[in-house]
Length: 84
Image (cartoon, helix red, strand yellow):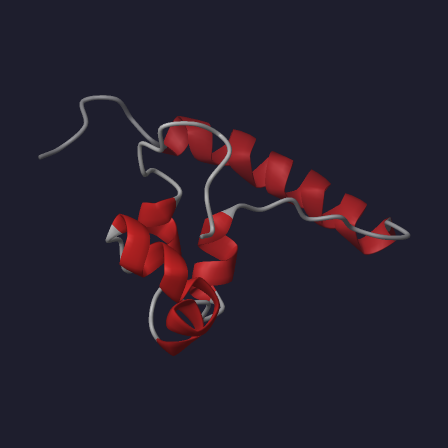
């Protein structure tokens, strides 16, 4: 599959933007990075396994899910979840 639009025209614009970003990063006093779950996953964080069973085995027994990710989408009957 090929694009009918030429891509070389836009490369210069991106190159200029990258150079601008590079300059700002090099001169910044600090950099703050905002990230979601993908960053923790890429760092090796897992949502299941021994750590999940150690801290959330009561949820696994009561609701039947086996990882933290699934637990976040479980259709609980209310916001107040019972730990009993």
